[in-house]
Length: 259
Image 1 (cartoon, rainbow, N blue to C red):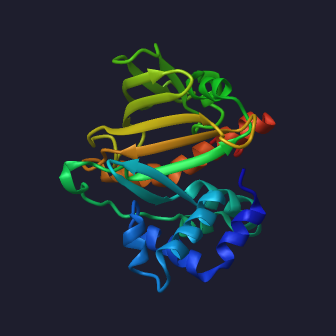
Image 2: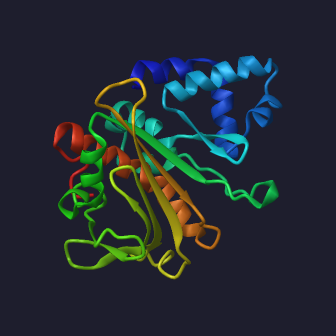
């Protein structure tokens, strides 16, 4: 599981920082694309990407025959919260959020995932599934939103705040406890997103291949071509949600009070 030391070590190399800058500028790149920007062998770029992935700064996904690399904002957000935010004024946080660009579909008509967030949590898949589907749990890390659903594919769901107002709603497309949840997403709590078309969230919950008792949670947000404002909000908000889930499951406390 990644540690602060791993992250700082990964960030210490200028070539690896260049790779992060490239993914920041345009996410979802292939190895060949990244190699075009660095004066080193393909094997050298692969080694640097491996270090970044081990540190949790980069995630990968297979789309068709290609392996795509994505910036993982969750680890960067955690470093910021531990080492930066406590020394700065709250308004600074708005200046440090990482942004990624929306890109068109892959060749051959395959749509690639847009925003990919991943975090390692010292918990079981069953406990994480409960945290994701239990309204008394989601209200402690998902911006005070209690999720309500029957948890059957094809059924609707809502996320409701303590005042009974619906913050978000959508349809459950796939429900496979405790490993996978796919849902459409409409964010109703903000005026700039309320009238946008639904996008999609995919939650993947997988036991860590090397560390017993550790689970990897990956959240993919895509299909937001008709919801650009929703995309921007979730790009900043999902890392906070995942960090909040991790803190709740590992310590029993909330990351931020009343978020």
